[in-house]
Image (cartoon, rainbow, N blue to C red; front, side, top):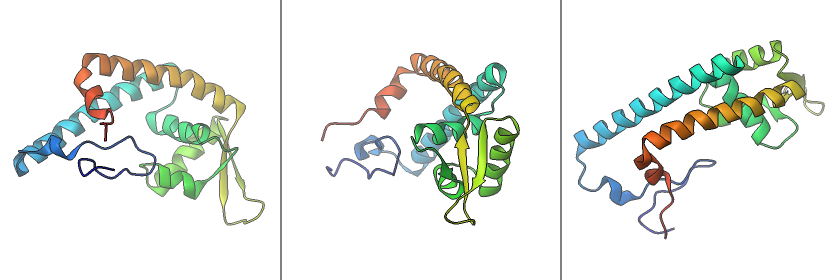
Length: 159
């Protein structure tokens, strides 16, 4: 990887080139950070509202289903799921409990190690995820159509 790239974090999109921050002072860096947070919060709020209205899922519930289903495994240990999420262990536990109550996931003890709790998506959970994924795509596509410069920032740069 060239010196113009930041390292990649496991499972995330390519990071931005270093030269994009050239000339930014501390105030510029903080202002950029606040703009990023404002953008994220705006789109996350729209996404949360759309998922709730159309599918009865909040964004945490959708993201939990997404990580379960897109991971490709039949089940995931709660601990592994927690590592992939931005939620605390207790918030994830409450989220999984709501999904389980709604019949979208099941929790079971690992047959090899009874200390491990496995989580798996049910057929109903997979169906809800498929439907909600279309809503997510629509909300995000609308957001990026209104802000094409954001797409340019996320594209990997040639090495």
